[in-house]
Length: 247
Ligand SMILES: Cc1ncc(C[n+]2csc(CCOP(=O)(O)OP(=O)(O)O)c2C)c(N)n1
Ligand code: SF4
Ligand SMILES: [Mg+2]
Image (cartoon, helix red, strand yellow):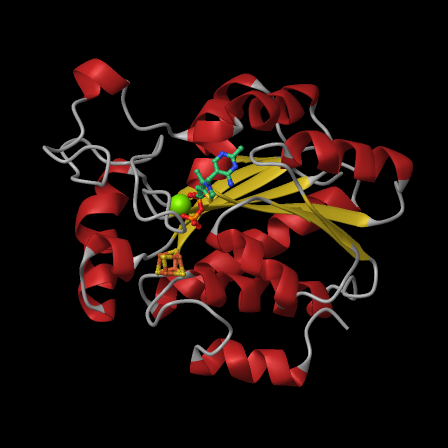
């Protein structure tokens, strides 16, 4: 089983190690539920990034590799090529997948590896105290952009699913969010589409998910959800950017 009843309860109660109001546990619960619905819960293996995303390792009971920072794209490539019958996914933060590991993350997409990549975008390095990442918004204050992100010095926030969709002919590329129940339901469907693409052997699939980090944003849990809607969604639109028709 991909997730035990005990862990489900811990995710709901917030006792799995995430801060109150964090979006990670919502996403983990959704991935576990979709794997069960697709009857892949005993067939999944995965790579985890470094960050608060690492806590997935305690939630999803399956063989896994805790990858060197940012390298899950390369490691998942090997996992899938050696075990083509398994469903292989990665679970990474924006700092891990984009800032530290953009090379490996992009290269796996470029090669069209038949893996599914989940990237949890909370606009900072949550685990290490809220430093600026590739998805920190213009003007956003973080521990390493104390006057607000200046894009003339840093470059602009990265829209990875759009980049992949426009350039690499992926099987599936989308962005979801967890800021309200409607978007949680929509994101669950995206997770399912991405995993189905892999099951059908269609190639690379990626879902970026907008989540909250109330601790480093210095907001309450409720305010953090509003920030996703008011500040993140305008820059990171929710939707499907690439989807192949199954023949
Ligand atoms: C090689 C290396 N560099 C830096 C770090 C420190 N570090 C740990 S987690 C992290 C960033 C995590 O950010 P993100 O991937 O966005 O995950 P989040 O915690 O926000 O979910 C960093 C830089 C590390 N562990 N290893
Ligand atoms: S620091 Fe942020 S991302 Fe990490 S568990 Fe806390 S709220 Fe979640
Ligand atoms: Mg992050």
